[in-house]
Length: 298
Image 1 (cartoon, one colour):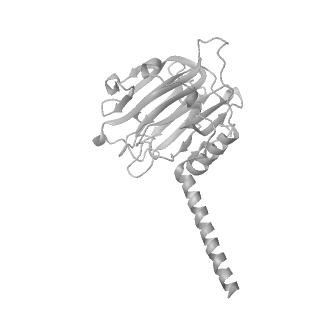
Image 2 (image 1 turned 180 degrees about the horizontal axis):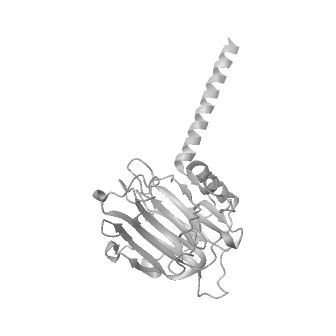
């Protein structure tokens, strides 16, 4: 009798333990990544759009409201883009973005560093790109690094693509690039999602770059490799930016302006590993179709 009671008790206890662990595991995923221990954006003051940027193209598709929110949109006539007043050789570059819901296939919303206007065919670039989608499917956040023209005729992209642990159409979220002489770190709400390390000058951007943002029609490749195109029955396609944060060494700054040291703490690494384990959907280093002699850092 006693042994039967003990057996039932142990079975019930084990079931309860398994249930608690399962709930705990799902709650961790639902609540987002582990605490990174450090919030880079908190050390950078938020400023208005005009403090850092000017319109580059499509001025009629760009509006700045009294609260400091910049709205840019794409329709069948044009998209829009903006560019920083200065170029930088290192720094922290961040902005809060809210994306449009519904059908946005083929539409690309971006925030990136580049010198393509000054080195055509031979430029450097560091990208955060939001690839539009179809209803019921999540947005894809694409990060990319181009070095000396590898984004032009000789295409050598270094793409890593992620889904997000939240819906980027419901609220503003902060996206950032931290570029130092030793590495490039991509962050979402202060959580590092990717670290690109400088292994040599041939695989790392070292020339000054400007900061850009834009919305445009990338139907040829943006959504499921071009399977779904921009459909202008759903126009306009709108993206909103606010809380611009830049803290970097401009190209004109002297030696007294010292860039950050880069790197990640142990807690930040754990948070990044969690994101990559749960939300990474493409890594160029693991693509068997890529010519790995062209991407020696892999």
